Amino acid sequence: MKIKLKLVILGNVPIEFKTKTLIKWKSELFDVEKTIDKYSINYNSDSKDWEYSDQNIENQLPDNFNGDILFAITNVPLQDNYYSRRLSNNRICITFCDMAKLLKNENIPIENLILRLLYAYSFAYLSHNKNLPTSIEFRSFTHDETKGCLFDMNGIKEEVIFSTNNPIICNSCIEKLKVSKVPENLIQKSQNEIKKINKILYYRIFDFIKQYPLLSLLLSAIFAIALGIIGSLIASFIWEKL
Ligand SMILES: [Zn+2]
Image (spheres, rainbow, N blue to C red):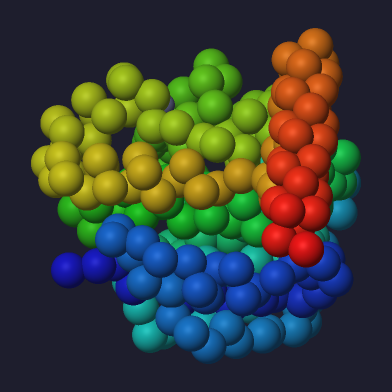
């Protein structure tokens, strides 16, 4: 049975954030509840550097919700400068603070960050007997090395760009999931699904040209010649018919 995810928005989020992308996302691992509720932030920051502690965020979220995991999406800084925190009662808070700017600089849709984390936490939920440990409990299922994997820790926040555009599940994480009795077919299906977490077509082409400038030039030259040939063939066909 698919995991039911409930998404809520806590306070203001960047104007370009498209909830539709998340609601319409098709996955064999989870279903996203169609209604995204909005909650206002009613308390001020209670930690250093204007951070909101886990307790503070928890106090502002519903205890009961329709789903297995609740994801609260916000824009305020979170405890210890993390971009996501695991709270009690299978609740997660994700912030766009710092992250939106990093992603936009690389032309990565900001929804990709949320999608990546929906997959990562859904797998963590399955591999922890449907009970996510809180961030305080410190049981980490991430790795410090940046591999472009769903389970990258991203201690250096800038490196989030590697796991929000064509992310993977690295071999060691696949093995860990298998050991935790996550069905292999679900891992395989998710590997295919996360290939769609990428940039829009325009920027994919742009990246290709940047990476292979000579090949791009050659391809465009071939394309131009082919267009010319097709054009003259059409012209001679019309001429003959007339
Ligand atoms: Zn990994």
